[in-house]
Image (cartoon, rainbow, N blue to C red):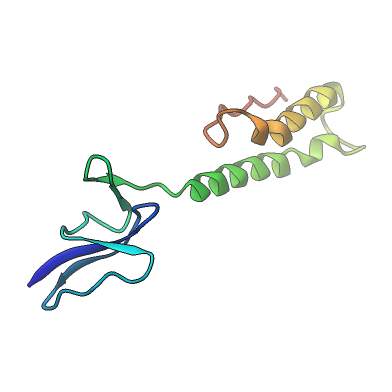
Length: 119
């Protein structure tokens, strides 16, 4: 029995890991590592030759965008003509602009979310 993993030759991300009775060649664009990965959410570090946890950067961005869009949607009512927040409409507008601009933050998507104005 052979134990090995196939990883993306560029990113090191695991695409397959397991044990088989035959030793297969890696598909095009992939490399065979003769070790079983701890899971599919790992990548091979070519420098240290060790497995590392893999976090998809697009997943982090998509999650942050969902949070941002949800916060904007929940505060839409504060900008309506008949808003129940006439005294804080400007503060809410500033908060909402900060949310729209947050993707330009140098720490995006690992940002500190702004505090919403008090009701």
